[in-house]
Image 1 (cartoon, rainbow, N blue to C red):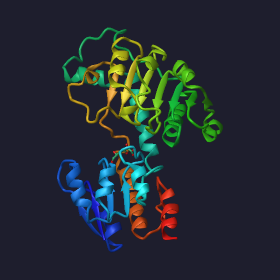
Image 2: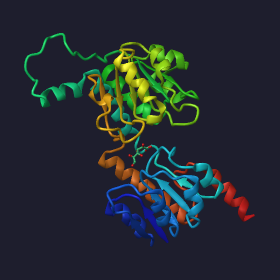
Image 3: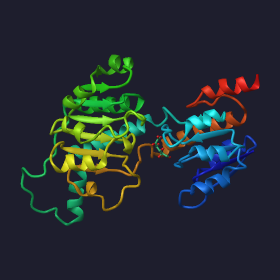
Image 4: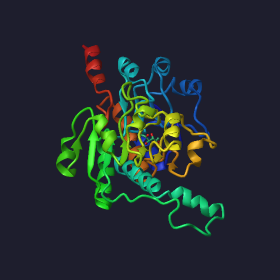
Length: 330
Ligand code: 8YV
């Protein structure tokens, strides 16, 4: 059985699949596959380990031998899951194992923006570590400031734990469903969306991207936030309107922004957001630690093995597929 893999992966992950008797083909080039190339590679494949490649309906229709797809991410907005489900293909993902690393990235960005870390770093690079006025280009203290989370799940909880431990930050959140665990263990307080905007000193976005929240952070929304507020997004770039964010920062509508995700990705090197004093932007490295990437890839490999053995995937985004397959069998 052939498994196609879209990026280089370590030998120990390959071994999980080859030890089970599967043949793997790994894309070796230092670029993403074009959609036609991906289809050509997957037409004979029975499994796909998908790392950073979008999969649309046409892909699934043209790859009739696929029995399982494992995406090496918790998010699956890049995959047409409805089409995969219709065709009986289970999609595996990697929740849980990346929560700490991604929450840590939000925590890092929050501090980088609050203390203007990249601006000061650039002062050294520009040979400007000389004379400084004592009240210029100052940061802000995070101690006791209110952390607001839009979409409080496992990743947001990791950020909140760090923020409370380091800076005693009270936590408010807005979700589709209340997070009872966070209310009990972190004293989180559920608020409406408007209150989240009005009360947060740091507003961090951790929601899954969907049709209802696409572009929700626009100029109108930024205008309702505090002028001293910091906006953090480590979820998906499409949740915010980038031109509106730029205007909000340039006009002092909000105080700063930290992004691990942009819209589009990659961000262009000359993007004006990169040269502001009050921004910190990273190239989607939320899960990029050795330990976390190893755990993600290993979960992806086990998702593939289960799929090829016709067993339920350890982590499956469309479990309805099993009901469907059963109905077909009857
Ligand atoms: C990336 C992520 O997918 O898990 C997610 O949803 O956005 C990230 O972990 C990862 O960088 C791709 O390998």
